[in-house]
Image (cartoon, rainbow, N blue to C red; front, side):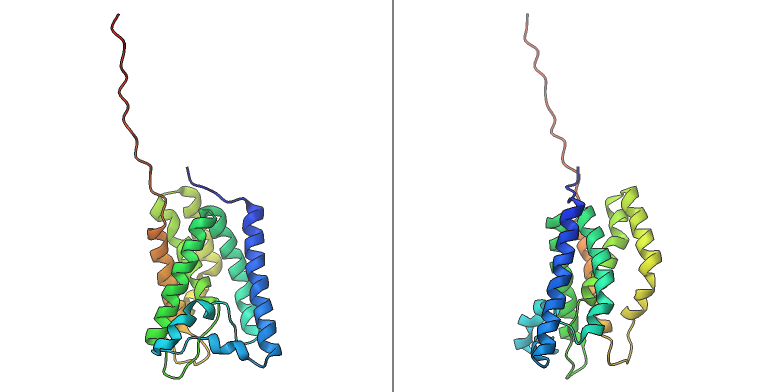
Length: 200
């Protein structure tokens, strides 16, 4: 049996997460972009500590608004189907994979932040999870997610457009697929029992 999280708990978790993102962006705007320094600047060893914070920062409300709905939807589904503990493990793995990918490959002098790497990671996770765990319902969910959000895959392709971090998207997507293998539900081993009948 897979531990499922209650829908209300999953919804509150995601609403709280999104509320935190909007609060942080409000602080960023009020302070003249002071929190933008938590973005990832590539190949600077000192920037490695910003890999996690960068996933919670955005460059303006428009940037955040574009991530809000898919983060809510995909995050809710992933938490509901996986359980909170596994969901948080997936998110952490995706953030690290996306952030390291940006740190290693982004253009010199760039500054990258935002939750889009997590969005791509959750997309990849849900897309393959059902096939990995061989569960019909989750396969159906993955197919539905692919139909509804499949167009975002264009954002994971290398591009010269300076405002799009395809690196964060691509490595987030890869991180989500890897996470589906890492946190997959493994069948429990069946313990053999020997019945002993008393001799009359």
